[in-house]
Each structure stands twice: as structure tokens, then as C-alpha cells.
Image (cartoon, rainbow, N blue to C red; front, side, top):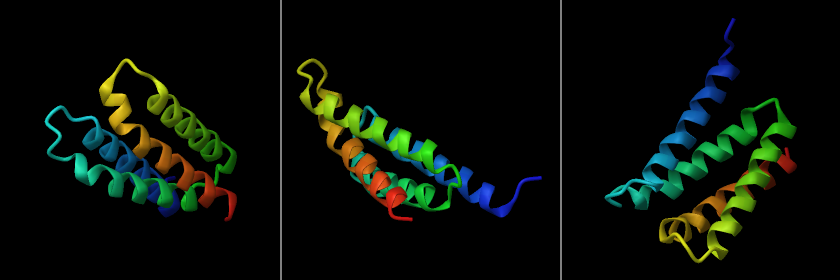
Length: 99
């Protein structure tokens, strides 16, 4: 049976995916809304999810991917979105670590 907490956790993951879609759209029209949507999804998922270690590992992966994206010289799209991913991972890690 799906509980209310599980539904909220699934909704948070869907919000994160929508933020990532907005972040990597080709037109860039939705790019300005990507960071707030990502932060809302990551914060709510970090607070709600009972799997603390899993969320910590995902947040650390986001931090690593953000740093790699900012340091690599090949793909401009990764450079443009690296800070958003880095900030979202850092916020998620801080929230999970303090709950």
C-alpha cells in the first residue's frame, strides 16, 4: 500500500526531473525556472525520504557531477548547468545531514 509519505517522495522526485528537463532544454526559455524547481524538489526529497544514505549518495553524486561539469572544457551545456547541479547537490547534502 502506498502511504502519503511515499506519494510525497515520488512527487519530489518528479519535481527534480522536471527541473532537470527545464535545465537541459534546447530553447533555454525555461532555463531561468530550472534552479528554483530543482531546489524545491531536492529540499523536499531530502526532508521526506526515509532513505537517508541513498539521498546522501545522490547528493554527493550531484556535487561531483557539478564540479566536473564546471571544470571540463568540451561541452558548453555542461558548463552552463554545472553550477545549478552543484548548488542543488550541496543543498540536498546539507539538508539530509541536518535532519
